[in-house]
Length: 68
Image (cartoon, rainbow, N blue to C red; front, side):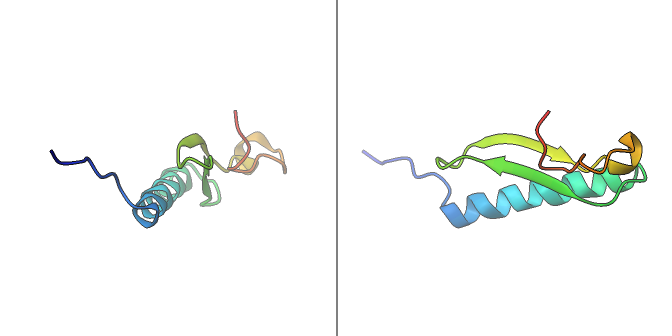
């Protein structure tokens, strides 16, 4: 019987960083500053994702890590 082995913590981190970078790439095409953010809990699960909307919202607090 073989056990299913999931991704390592390092692989998870790389995947989450790739997601944040993808969000940054998307938002820069909308005239925003290229910031993407992901929030991950202790178990390695995605809690939230977002991007900077300071320019669009004219709100200096509208950072990517702010959850919706």
